[in-house]
Length: 375
Image (cartoon, rainbow, N blue to C red; front, side, top):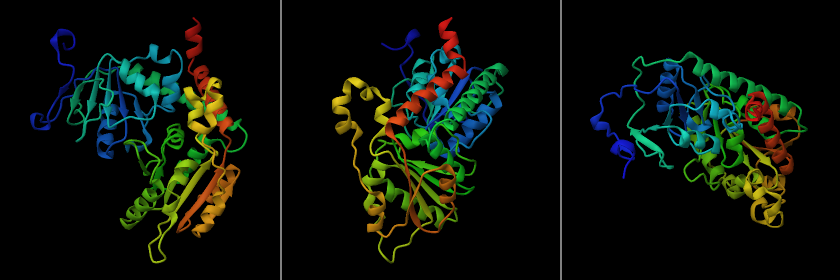
C-alpha cells in the first residue's frame, strides 16, 4: 500500500527525465542543507532568497552565511513548543543532514518532504515523498513575507541568548572555542572539523564567508581525522588556498595521533590543530546515557577518560604544542604559523553538560516557547 490517493511512498525523478525542475513548493517552505557539494547549497540559498524561505545549514553544507540563515537552529527547533507554532508545509532537503535531532524532527514531522539530490541518495530516514535530481528553479511562486521574518526573529533572539549565556560562563566554553576558531579562519582558509561534539558546537555559529569547511559526515567516524586534516591542508594550499585549521575533540585527536608522524622530507602544511580536551566523550553526557541512572557504567563505557598528556605526546613527534586557558590567548594562538602545530584547550566535561542545558533553557525563554507551552 502506498500513500493516500494511491501515491507511491517515494517518487524518484531521474535526471534524464527533467529539464530544469519548476519550483512548485509552497510559500511556507524551509530549506535544510546537510553535508553536500557547495554548488548545490548555493543554488538552494539562491532559491530561498527569492522565495523568502528560512535556511537551516550544517557547517559542512558549503553554504555561506546569508540573511535567510536560521541562527542556532538546533536550539531554536528544539525549544519546546516553537516548531508547533511554525511548522512548514514542505521541507526541501539538500545533502545529508546528520547533526541534529531537532532538525530530524523538523523533516519527519512535515506534511511532505522533498529531498533534492545531486548524485547520491540522501534520504536515510526514508521520509521523502520526492527525490529530485537537482535544486528546483525559481518560478515566481507564492511568497509569505511573515514566514521568513518569524524564523529570522527567533534566530536573532536565540543567538543573543546564547551569547549572553556564554559570556557568563567561566573559562573557555566549548561552543565559544568553536566560534573563536571559526572566526579566525581568513577568507580562502580551510577548516576541518571533527565528529561528535566539535561539529555540533560549530553548528551554533556560522563559519565566515569564504571559509571552506570539511567534515567526515558519512558514518561520522573519529578515525583518521588528523591525517585527513593534514592531507586536506596540503591539497588546499597546493591549489593556492590560505591557512588551514582543524577543530577536534581529544578522543578524535588521540585516535589518529600517528598522523603527526611525518617523514623528515615530507611537506608540512600551514595547519593549526585545535584540540578541545575534556578528557573523554563529552557529547554522551548530553544524551540519554548521561542520566544519573547510568552513572555506575557511564565513565568507563561512554566517558572513556584517558588522562593522556597531550604536550608529551606532541613532543614525541616534535610537533609544536601550546596550551591556552583564556579567549585572548586562544585568539593569539590562532595566528597562521606556517607549519603543523597543536593548540590544546582544556575544558570540563560536567561543565559542558550543564552549559548545554543552560543554553537550551535560555533559548527557549528567548523565543517564548515556554510561555506558549504554559498557556
